[in-house]
Image (cartoon, rainbow, N blue to C red; front, side, top):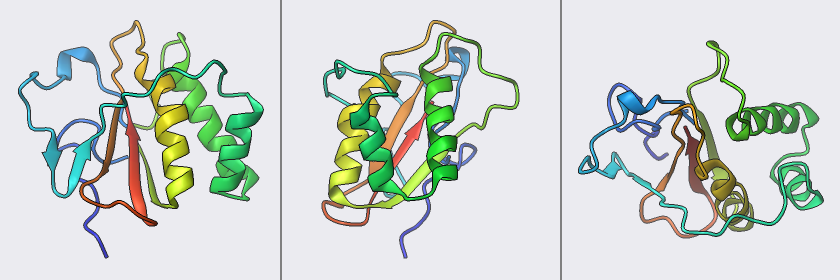
Length: 145
């Protein structure tokens, strides 16, 4: 078993579950980018020409899990992060997706990652972390704010 990602208190912001973090809490630009077996993914992929409600994203989510409840929760979570609306005070500070197959992990990174990384005007920052050095099935992806 791999170590879990660092907690927000023990590691870099965004590590733990996706984490919403105000810009005033952001680490300095020189802060470490790797911690406890996890590393930041800079998400160099272009923004896709569709949104979270597209059939492509629906296919990705149904490939990830057959559970309608998990899909509904994740879609609501992602929609909240990509919206211009303020996040509720009770908004979960993080989300961790573990054990993703290669195709699903790559789909999250290349399709959803850029949507999350495009930024919000209210200072909430999204960070995406991945398990360092893993390149096959069972890769872990983390999406945070």
